[in-house]
Image (cartoon, rainbow, N blue to C red):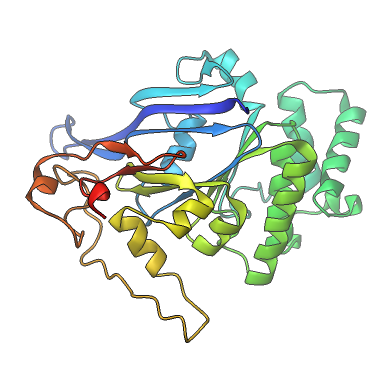
Length: 324
């Protein structure tokens, strides 16, 4: 049985809001408000949900690019949140982040080869000659010719830039790569190439992924398990096949009903969610989804649902899941 490489326990990330006249804290944006999940070695966990639900904030909190307010991030038995700066530097060699916009995450004034070597220099890996050789190796591993390493980011296409970002991410031989919507800014044909590259790198290097995306068809293709997030909470998590075959939370059902179907004979009933997602500055009491839920009752407004285990790792937070 595979061991968990990462365990998230009751993670909370809040952003304080200060008054304009008197600079004191008057509220908190509860971007992530108590989520828990785990990932096994070699697994790909998809994280989905509407914009503003806390997916990207979660990814940055795991790496401590944003300091969590509370909770635990256990990576290979070590609590990332309690780690010192020296310990954190060593941990980050094993955890890397791929951002959504490759052009924004690359220094426009540096040659791409120098950027790859800089990562190795910061972590004191090899001498200049060895660092150049390592950088060339990973540059070619992502499908690019090493003779282009003297070019600047603007001289590459979007898909090529994303390959460069992946080369930089894997240059330290990490165990976990967090991909924050890595293909959403790319054309469909290029998306397929990057997804295939991810699968190739996973098999070749034994990587573990957290894959954040809006496109549910892409998430279904790459993920072993999927976690559905809404307003700072995880409302459902299950194996990919189980979740698509048997979604139980009303929000998950609404998301899946919005997936376009090419077959005109297969008419899927659309579930329309009324209104917008509430503000994380003042989330609704009880179940956070009750303001838009077609199943909401009085209990949903008063009491937050407990997480229910349906077996096989299928977890749902809903008062009425057993009555479906």
